[in-house]
Amino acid sequence: EHFFISSMYCGVDLLMSVLVCCCELTLVLWYIPSYLEKDEPCVVCGDKATGYHYRCITCEGCKGFFRRTIQKNLHPSYSCKYDGCCIIDKITRNQCQLCRFKKCTAVGMAMDLVLDDSKRVAKRRLIEENREKRKKEEMVKSLKNRPEPTSSEWELIRMVTEAHRHTNAQGSHWKQKRKFLPEDIGQSPVAPTSDGDKVDLEAFSEFTKIITPAITRVVDFAKKLPMFSELPCEDQIILLKGCCMEIMSLRAAVRYDPESETLTLNGEMAVKREQLKNGGLGVVSDAIFDLGKSLAQFNLDDTEVALLQAVLLMSSDRTGLTCVEKIEKCQEMYLLAFEHYINYRKHNIPHFWPKLLMKVTDLRMIGACHASRFLHMKVECPTELFPPLFLEVFEDQDV
Image (cartoon, rainbow, N blue to C red; front, side, top):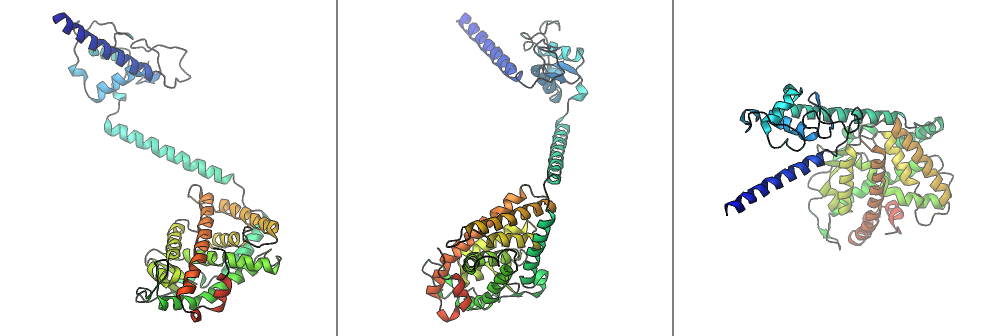
C-alpha cells in the first residue's frame, strides 16, 4: 500500500513536470528576433532562446519565471534541498526555484527592469497611445494621397452648391427663423389609420401648408443642376417624383436639433417626433429623426448636402426612364466629384465616404416607405386637405 501511494505521488509529479514542460515548449513557438543566431540557447537553462529579456538572452520559460518571482516577491520564500548546488538545465529547471532564480541573477537578469502592476499598466497605456497615434498618422497620410477635385469638378461642385443655397429655405439662419409647432398640435390623434398608426388632422393640415413650397424648392434645385435640363421632360418628371421625398427628408434631417429634439421642416416649422408621426407620416417620422441624429456626427457642409441631393436626383433605377445610360453617367460624375470633395475636406471619421454613401440607401428607404404611407393618408384624410402639387408628385408612385 505504501509503495502504491508513493508511486501515485511520483506519477502526479511526473505528470505535472510533463505538463509544465509542454506549456513552456508551446511558448517557444513565439516569434524569434532576427538578431538571435539559429538555435541560440537560453543562458539560464540552455533551452532555445526567444530574445533579450531583462538584459539577457533567455527562453520564454525563464523570462516568465523571473518576472513572476520579482512581481510577486516570491524569492524570499524559495529554498533548496541541496544547499543551493543544483544544476539548472532544460530538464531540471522546474525542480529547484531557488537555484533557478540564483542563476537568473548570476547571468545578469536585471530585477529593476521588471515592472510592477502600475508601471505595467502605464506601459500598456503608452503602447496603446502610440498605436492610436500611428493609426491617425497613417490615416492623415492616406488622406493626403487621395485625389482631390479637378478644375472641372470644382466647377461642377460650385454649380451644385449654388443650386442648393438658392433653393434651401432660410439657409444657415434656420435656427433663428424657425417657429415651433405648438405642443398641443399633433399630440391628440383623432383618426385611426388602417395600419394602426394615428393621424392628427390639425397637424396634417399644418404640414400640408408648407409642402407646396418645399416641393417647389426641390424642383428649382433640379432645374439649376448641370445636365438635368438636357434630359427629356418625361425623364425629368420621373426623377423629380422619385427623389422629392428623399431630398425633403434630407433637408429636414440636417436640421435636427438635439437640444429641442426637433426637425425643422422647410426651414421654418420645428416639429417633434410624435407630432410628425401623428401628423400623417407614421413610422416614416422615426426614420427621418433617426437619420437626423445619425447625420449630426458627420458635420456636413452645404456642398456635401447639395451633392447628396444631386446623387439622389440622378438615380437611373427609377421605373419608366428612357435615358438610363445618360442619367447613370451623370450620377457617376456627381459621385466622383463628391468623393474627391470628401478627400479635400479630410474628415476625421474613419471610412467617412462609405458611411456617408449608406445614408443614400437610408434616404431611398424613406422614399419607398413614404410612397406606401401616402396611400394610407389618402384614405384617412379629407381630399381637400391635399394640395394639388402634393397629389401630383406622390400619386401613382411605385410602392
